[in-house]
Image (tube, rainbow, N blue to C red; front, side):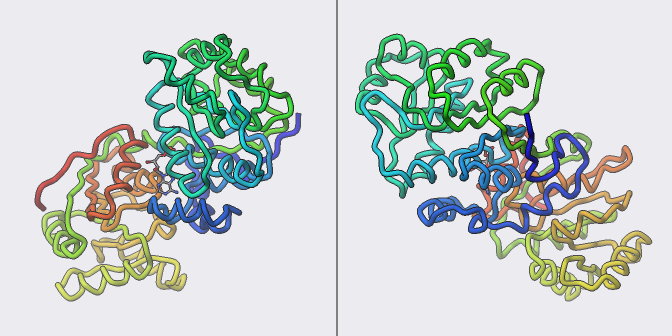
Length: 396
Ligand code: AMP
């Protein structure tokens, strides 16, 4: 089997470059249609996540995709958006008791979230979504299936029940998705999955996502996928265990004052992150007005300026360095005691990279995020990725 790598496979590595490309790619670059771009914009997503950058273009062309990505990486949109686009492009309506895309998920919670995502991203497409899972009566689900649906999201056991009841058939499936395949393995779903897949047309698109690749899943993928594109994003969530994290909810206009207060209390070397270059410059200017020396490091600065800023930060003559995500990749300074997120990153993995700048070489560190009212969704994405709530700090 030949494997096509759209980008190098970085799973699990300390890979500064993995995120470079996604940060410079926009949703408009991925080939998505206006209806989907509108829905994505409504969700407040400004840039696609790494898994989205890697998976969406090949999936749109009909390629099979094998993705290694955890929940929290944006993987749902990575498969939902191309499916919605492809189904929307062909005018055919689903026949009664059939579906055109089938998504299998291990738990009712995940299945519910996926169905909801399809509805949200597909709100301007007119495509229909049905959800079936166990533990609730079947008749309502059967009635939903009777007319036929574009997208069916299901847990394997209950889907098999409906197949046995002849409430649905799978011979019209154009795309099959297996989400959290390793979790499905843990729950004993491999045989049900094989049985279900065997009922779908051999000529179909298959997308498989998994957080890890145990041999059983590799074998399953080998049997179900044809010439897949392999995509992966680094498992980023565990690097920050020694970092004490806090979030402060503040109005956007109160962020500068909060930053000043925090800097007055933290005596150590502090790295401040902003989302944009202009934002970084504005923070430096503001701090300067209050007599706090700082320097900015970002893509608009010359190499000389960056080197100087870094050297001053290393030597301790500038205690505060204000950086954007991309510029911060090159920073390797040991004794950063504090990371302050003046803006929350819209890509959850960036948060982990940011706070990983402190607590280096076995030291401990503090990371404080200033979260404006419009940044709450970013915080939710981050908390999902790190699988923890960031404790709230009431005042600086
Ligand atoms: P998932 O990994 O699919 O469960 O997604 C994790 C979270 O990230 C969800 O809350 C999504 O709404 C959010 N999300 C997905 N894509 C993006 C994006 N491109 N920008 C910001 N947030 C996103």
